[in-house]
Image (cartoon, rainbow, N blue to C red; front, side, top):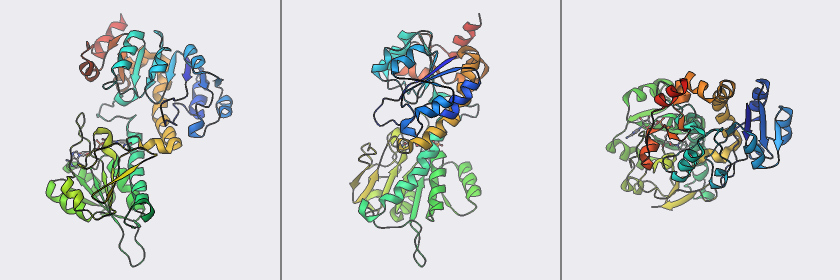
Length: 376
Ligand SMILES: NC(=O)c1ccc[n+]([C@@H]2O[C@H](COP(=O)([O-])OP(=O)(O)OC[C@H]3O[C@@H](n4cnc5c(N)ncnc54)[C@H](O)[C@@H]3O)[C@@H](O)[C@H]2O)c1
C-alpha cells in the first residue's frame, strides 16, 4: 500500500503521524511510504532519517496526498486539505467530527473511508489512542504547576519538594483516572504531599493500593473538596464524565478560599473545565490568568508543548493499527479487529458513528451493517 504522511498545518501542531521507526516498519512490510518535506521537523526527525528508513520525501503536500492510498495525520484535515480527498483513499487521524460539520460533509462527499483515532475502543471500553495523550497531559500538569508556583510566574513561591526542615507543597488532584494518576505520579516524584479526590470507590481502592500509602485518597464530595482545596498549593482538574461536559466540582467560593499565588491547572478544559473560575481556554504562548489572586492554567492541547514525546507516544499506539490497515486493506482490517472498527466514522459516504450523525442531523448507518454489506 502507498502510505502518505503530510506535514501538519494546524496552528502550533508540531507532531507527526509516523516516525522514522514507523516508516522502517512499513517499508519492511513491503509498503511505499511518502513523507512531506519537514513533516517530522517539529518532533525532531529529519528528512534524512525518513530517507534512511526507506521512505520517499516529497516536496509538496499535494504530491503526498495524490499518490497515497492511506493518509496518516495527527489532527483533523483543515479546509485547504479537503480538495485532496479521493474516493479510493483511507484517512487515519484524530477527527473529532461532532463539532466539525464542514469536514463531515467533505468526507461524505468524497466517499473515502475515515477512521478516527479517538473512537478506536477496546472491549473493556478504554480508548487506546487517547490514553497516551492523557498520560502526557497528566504528567505535564504537575510539571507546569510546579513552574507557575515560582514567584516570577505569579506563584506563591513554593518548591513542591519543600526543603530540609520545610514542609513540601500540597497538590490536590481532582479525578483519579489516567490524567489524575499520572499527575499524582509526577507530583509525588517531585516530593509533594499529594491527595487524589475521586468518586469511584473501586478506583480509590486501586489508587490506594498502587501508591502504597504515599498518596492520600479522598472520596469526592463538596465537603471534602472545600477542605482540601482551601489548603492546596496546586489543584489539578482531571475529571471526566464520558460524553458529558465536565462538572464544576471546584466552585468559585472554593477558589476564593485558596491562598494568593496558589495554582490551578485544569486539564479537563477540553471538556469545558472542572473549575468554576476557569472560564477561558488559554494557549501555550499565553498560558495563565489570575482570578481571586490564584494562577489559572487552562491549555486545551497540553501534549502539543512536548511534541517529540507526544509523537513517540502516539505513534507507539497507532503503528500496530496502521500496519494492520496497510497489510489487510481497510475493509478486511476493520472486519478482523472490532476495536479498530469502532474508529470508523465515515465509510464511502455513510456516517457510521451515531454521535456524529446525531450532531449533524445526518442518516446513521451502523458500522456492523455497513461492513457486513461489504462481504457480499
Ligand atoms: N488539556 C489537555 O491537553 C488534555 C489532554 C488529555 C486529556 N484531557 C482531558 O482530561 C480529562 C481527564 O481525562 P482522563 O483520560 O484522565 O479520563 P478518565 O476517564 O481516565 O478519568 C476521569 C476520572 O474522573 C473521575 N470522576 C468523575 N466524576 C468525578 C467526581 N465528581 N469527582 C472526582 N472524580 C470524578 C472518574 O471516576 C475517573 O476516574 C478529560 O476531560 C480529558 O479530555 C485534556
